[in-house]
Amino acid sequence: MIKAFNTRPVLDAVGESLTLITMVGLTFASAATLAMPAPQHEAATEAVVHQLPRVEIVAQRTVVHVLPTVIVTAKRSSE
Image (cartoon, rainbow, N blue to C red; front, side, top):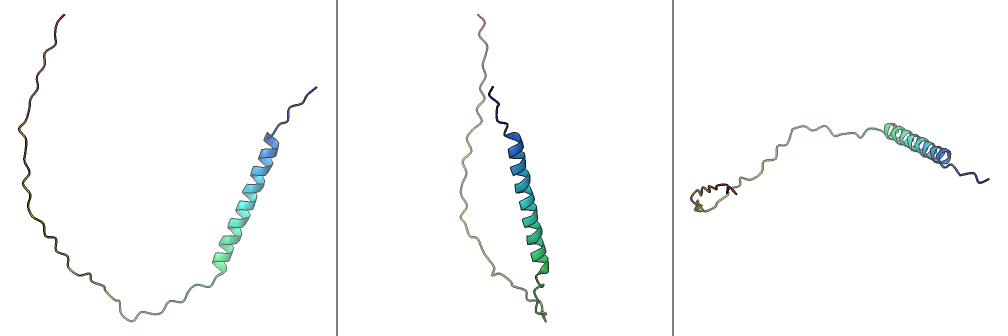
């Protein structure tokens, strides 16, 4: 008598272990991020406003030719 090998329990166990490993890794990563000290920002005495130079766009006018409207009519042939 030949018994078929069922892969479902093995794949379920592998999937669950990979999920658990991923969740533990993400937990440690978030804990490490929260444990880092916040960067100290220097107090700005005055806000600096950067203004970009003015840009002028120069182009020549082009003439657009418009074709006349074409109306097509068709009749059904009766056979």
